[in-house]
Image (cartoon, rainbow, N blue to C red; front, side, top):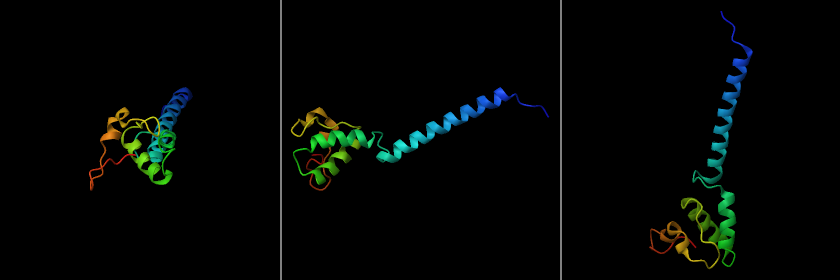
Length: 102
């Protein structure tokens, strides 16, 4: 049987390790934010600003959900126009038809 050069084995090992690291980072990012593609840290900061003048518990929960579904788009402040983020503006509650996002 023919021996495989040590350099070739090292290169193969590095390539495999790199691929596994990319998969692990992707899995952690997806697990952190429910698969939405936007890290919770981003939405958390934007929603804290948006909900700073409102009841934090309910506002934060709804804002985080809307932020995740709208790829991180949240109006810039507590009284900013929802027109900054059409996805955020247009999301409605299925039962009442009222706006879902605070």
